[in-house]
Image 1 (cartoon, rainbow, N blue to C red):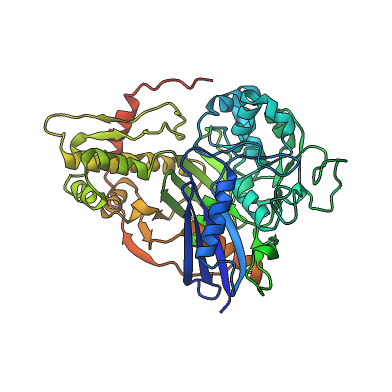
Image 2: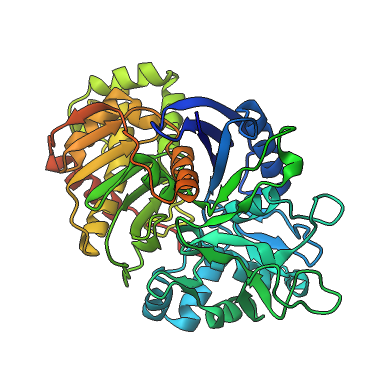
Amino acid sequence: MALVAGVDSSTQSCKVVVVDIETGAEVRSGRALHPEGTEVHPDAWWRALLSALEAAEGLGDGVEALSVAGQQHGMVLLGRDGRVLRPALLWNDTRSAGAAEALIDEVGLEELVARTGLAPVASFTSTKVRWVRDAEPGLVPEIAAVALPHDWLTWRLRGYGPAGESPLGPVLEELVTDRSDASGTGYWSPETGAYDVDLFQQVLGRPAREAAGADAGTDEGAPGVSAGILLPRVLAPEAPAGTVHHSYLAPGHGRILLGAGAGDNAGAALGLGAEEGDVVVSLGTSGTVFAVAPNPVADTSGVVAGFADAGGLFLPLVATLNAARVLSSVAGILGVDHDEFAALAADAAPGSGGVVLVPYFEGERTPNLPTAKASFHNLSIASSTRSNLARAAIEGMLCGLADALDAVRAAGVTPRQLLLIGGAAQNTAVQQVAAQVFDLPLRVPAPGEYVARGAAVQAAWALAGSKPQWPVDTVQDRDADHRPHIREQYRTAVGAVVFQPVMA
């Protein structure tokens, strides 16, 4: 039985699934935790990856290909010796909000969206790079390459890395990525399929170029580095990135082909088998709404990020910082577990007796309010029940995502059904409320590691030359049960709040 492995190196952990290439059936899996925080040294990801692979026997007999999907936007700065220069700033680190505003002031919002498909916000790599230029200027001359989490992990699996700590050493020219992750940097264009090196130079103040492979020329005394900062070479969706270095394989194992890798949301779309017209709402640490679209999207409002997908199409996406943690936070306030929380919410009527939660516990990315906080509204003696508070938490979380769906529609996407994924999607109360908040038929796929499965799809694609069509089990199908008043009272509450301005 031929096997392929997929990796999801997410914010919280590293997950590995090993699947049968013919059927997509999961054979085994492994997992290892990542450190908490919005700033993490990539070495922790590497240790977790090796641990999760070992737990899943992902580098053992039978596995013929592997691919890594990872959290988008994380900034990995490398020196000429291949060492990481500082802990990586993750997507959820908001300290670069002022840098985003500075880029918009300098270049103009419409110009940036036209060139990259993105309006700069604190989440994107470009704003983090700009923050380094302004906050840590002494580091700028040392930067030889800028990579993303999945780029760096793929590079390490191929045997590259710091001198003395990796079999092949710091050949930075061998850094590779894919179009989905490149499209989240803020200096790559989904429309042209190329880096905007002029924009990168404006961001950091130093020139850059795309890595060309190990045969490219190098500066004297600078192993693996040619003129300018290296940006990973962008591979086609089906292209192999190389092979896992033999020193990481089990004795006697022939080789394991490596896929190009992907950003996490693009990986999830592959794992779900999402097609044009499918809208995915993901309830994880962050909330995301994304759709598979045939054409690039450039939303000058700045709400919809015009990403590329991992299959050759496009993935317009809106993200929120507050999703499943909204539910766990309110469950903690109420002193209940997840099942008790769902039961409480199910006892409340649609609209939660008028109670509304504006769910910006961790600031917010969409709308761009990094300093905002959460608040309950319309509390009265009669409405202040535990059930109303529980249901209001679900409604608030989903109403923010319904606003995101409206923005995707306004960008030209016509959705036909909604796929609800993530741990919170298995909550029966969340499923019920989602059918009332959204105005689309709702499908809830069976629980699964869809980002890792998407990476496995990509690995199989690179190995076999065609994308597999693995079935996806569904645990719930619901017709739309739209209750417009839920969103109407949410909009009223949000409109009544005055938020602190972004400070540079």
